[in-house]
Length: 163
Figure 1: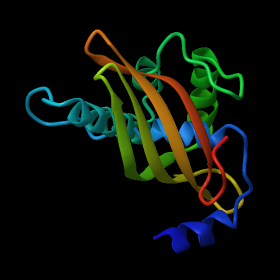
Figure 2: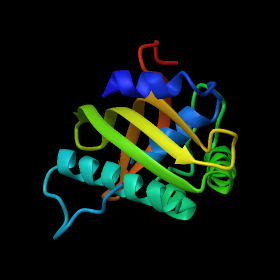
Figure 3: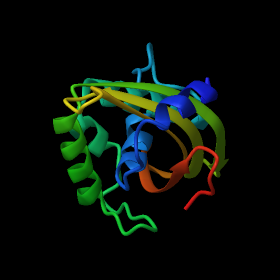
């Protein structure tokens, strides 16, 4: 799969906002049944909810998954990320994601780090009519009153060092 994503990625240039958007877009598919029992199950459900929200282009659902105190090394706040979603969803007609959870680290059931690999494709009004990229993400979350919220994130193109 990654070779195919790389082939598609060669057709598009990198942009500063697309990786972070992909990470949050990667987070969907609402879980069935009752609430998950373990922290790991809750985190997997969190990723699934985000994935589904992203493919629906539901910006408000994605922003609700981010802590009001969000900040990252690139200087982004929660409001900045919301604006990135707004911009991207206005440009993209349809969004499709392939999400792989590479690792979940849980710290005392109050904090977690989720490592993802995400391939994202979108149809657009651009010359080729689509764009596609693949990224690796390291997402830091905190459990705030039983709800996992994103507090920070790092990302890069697949194969590069996280920053």
